[in-house]
Picture 1 (spheres, rainbow, N blue to C red):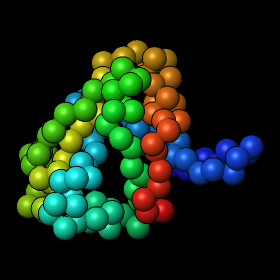
Picture 2 (picture 1 turned 90 degrees about the horizontal axis):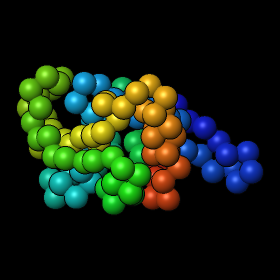
Picture 3 (picture 1 turned 90 degrees about the vertical axis):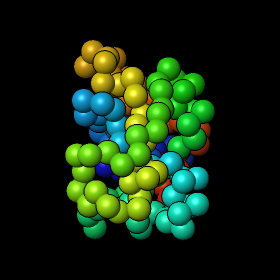
Picture 4 (picture 1 turned 60 degrees about the vertical axis):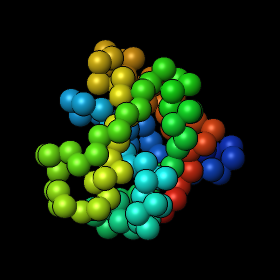
Length: 118
């Protein structure tokens, strides 16, 4: 789920990386991970996973929301300390398919989006 801008050579995630489920897109809050002495390797579930960072202000600037969702009940490894930092990007799940795809494309072009691992 990585695309390369042919003009700049810059890598970015594809919009498919931000496909929501019923309550939003699962993410982890960097500040809470850091406070718990956790990093990118602690949120990776599979060897092919990548980790990107994006500022919540940028997410909100395109009309989406973000909210804390610590210790969600329906996840693998429910006792892992990373789950205290779980959050959701919200707003995509209520959009029509076309509008959702446009917002997903907006997400991957936000100025603050960067690869942290991968």
